[in-house]
Image (tube, rainbow, N blue to C red; front, top):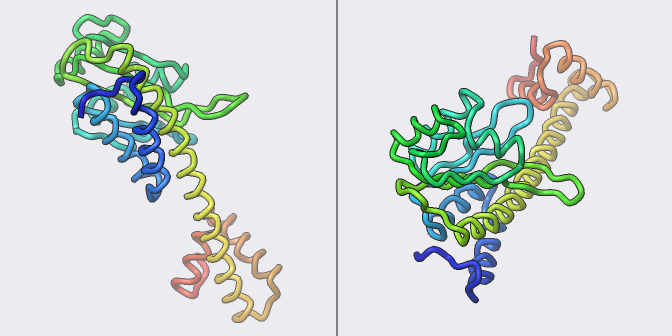
Length: 234
């Protein structure tokens, strides 16, 4: 597929199809895979990847189209140095025209160049109106220098906006599904306690909550263990 021209008549239709594909994706994993595969087709890059922000831990490498991208990410996440880290922190796009000559992260650039990557375009995945929040970073890579021009950067930004909204939506859906599942598990576990010990629902919930706190175990995990073993954790 020829790289898209952001001024062409069919660019809106192309991204409309992508939006539908992202909407139909089943979960965060499929959403991210659709994004990186679209990037390979629509942009002048040989490799693509997505790293996602996570709460309280280092970013998650969510998808890569080639092991070389995982190496590029790991070099940065292990040292907290590189364009990916900068994009996550500052919510800004980073373009590296040639890793042989770019001097902003010299040690990282030298290692990436040795991997055969010359051009890098890291685009933030941003959502929010008044308060901007970063979902993660879309990384685009090419073995040739100067692979990403103005058109490519514009397309990458459009793709980044679509990806950010789709990922945020998929995460929300997974969180809601997980919450519903947790409530069902807790309800089942409470029913077991109510039947076995002849207690009401308030007392049954209090028992589960106490075991959760005493064992430093999530409430849903305590409930799952009770359902599976018919015993409370020690």
